[in-house]
Length: 279
Image (tube, rainbow, N blue to C red; front, side, top):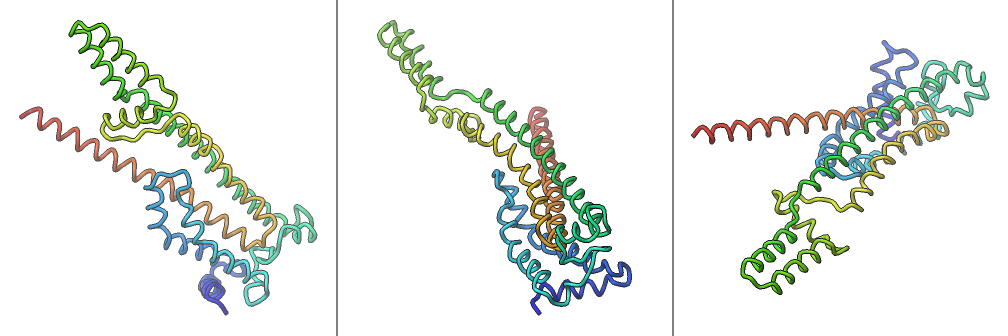
């Protein structure tokens, strides 16, 4: 017996006095929570990276656990006969449809699972789109407020040339300013302007558009869990429901901690500025 079936079986025995025949299903949920707790440091590090694919590493590390569970509930063994209410954990939705139909005893268990997965996916999609909109607005605001470094320097040269009374110098400086400001590929001006605004690296218009599209598409991937749960055994659906719900709650928690840290840092800066002004 591999490690996964052994741990799930032991957890099921501990929960059996309370949950009876559904104890193994609860053990799968508990085991999934333990796996996600072990991966929490990686999820936190990925979130701090602030990339569109934050959290992919914890997802990849879960794949071996998922395959072990799939094998345990498809290749026979001690866990295959356990149930969640009326549905065997090794059964698929097609089996439930053949045994009582859509609203049969097994069918209702799968419908409950699909409803829970759809609710989590909708919650994730709404929050993901909202976060993408906020990030896009913040990036646009930062880009609008950033000074154009090369343009400013070229303008200063033009002003200096005008004061010197040399019209040719003024025209040359103005031409340089226009060239720096209107050159199609002048990404360096954006980066220089960002550096002048406290070292904040800004994104180009193309990068902001890519980020916006990713922010709108990635949350919808949660709905793919519905299709997967419909073709895999019930035990795999429970695992996917638990880990997806954990991911949503975990991200909300990490975002909350980030906002609290930013508020604390802002308050400390304001307090420090008030003390200096009083001195």
